[in-house]
Length: 320
Image (cartoon, rainbow, N blue to C red; front, side):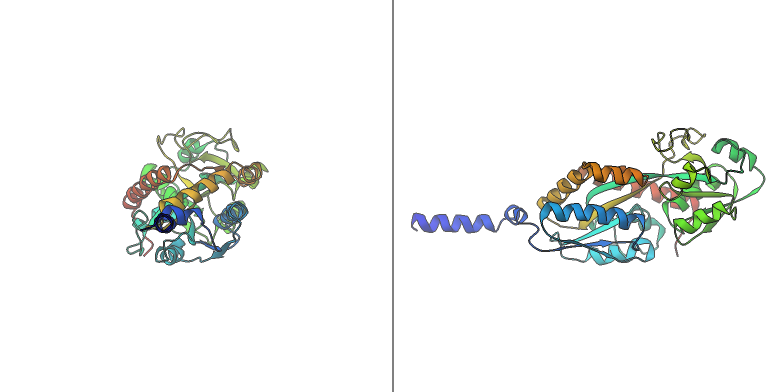
């Protein structure tokens, strides 16, 4: 074989390698399936980051919403898509809950997806009407002993619902009744109008009302206090060590997606999260920019799946 032919064969082999394909990614528009309705937190964060990915790669990252079954509809759709990097899933901590909450979720979050990156996270809040005299969660629970407590959330099976059940019933031993609403906004309205005693919800939705004094935050469900509400103690400080409930928004790809493509997406997302306009927007929404490697996200996801499985078992909550 002549030298010219050998060079041609070698070049052809190089082009066919996965790494070479990754270098040309993306060569066409990428579909980003958001697992919740337009206008929600996952949609807002997903669209903001997707636009940055489009700017970075020079290809459209087309967002479409596929809400339903707490995120399961979109997850099952993306799970069976070609693992070529052209179909991505944007979802929340719900994906780590649903495997235990539903008798047959239809997917395994650890086996059927590649975790690409967490974009942002935010802790839950325990909120009451400002007419409540208790200064913090510890005082509030003491004042409610022997009484029936009603608490609102953004819906059955949400992380805030499970956190509320675990906190009020399992840990505090309260006579608590869950009042689910179709989203965070109506749950906040119920707390503002005193239709419920308390509210367990992710921080972004009630934050403006708390800052205006229309609602009172008793505790934040992070391990450390948050910059947005520095005077609000953590649930751990309130007598429940180690308690943490965070909502997060993340990008996933179907299992078997090329590690090179995942690395490209992860790097681009991390770059986006370092941009001042993205950080400022996330902070204004009550989110903390997250980022990190795909491997770190994979480890965290496993810990989240295990944690919520324990809480689902302890509370007996099901979606069926």
